[in-house]
Length: 197
Image (cartoon, rainbow, N blue to C red; front, side, top):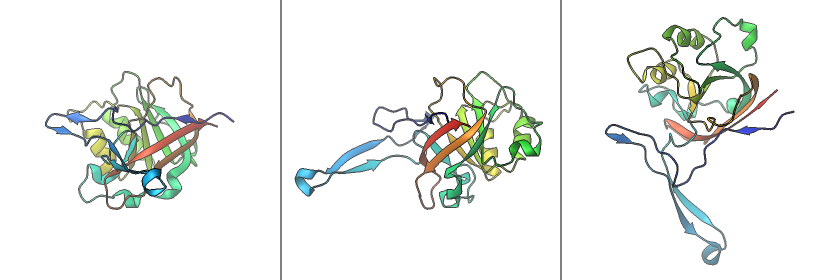
């Protein structure tokens, strides 16, 4: 049995925060609330965004009124993945090739330009959780088309993995994706681990 590979970023004040024109995600904050000298135990107050670090997007992140984190089935905290290369996606796999697969792992770490047709073909699979290493570039004029299309299909998307320096990743294996149990929100920081099997 191979070792688990942790693909999660550390959460700390020095971490990268997403920003775009006229927008920035909330920064990470941690303040000691009490300590053993005061209360006989230590507690910290945290401040962060729902899409902070390695995280999962609920469909409502891009589609108003769509599913929130409440709809994330805890059965998918642990499952099996199949890796798909975004540069050369195998969209002609047979249904039995996906039997037992709960997570589609889209490896977008190499230079690529995915076609709309390939993404649409993958979306026809009944895989509820998509996991993205790197950033998927699609041959479409709208830079957010991929995220909006995933959300519109009712999929949960795990992204911002710490995978740039991990080398080759297994084709299939076990995966752990453990978001917080948040009510009515658009996403959650998530721990992600995989191992080949």
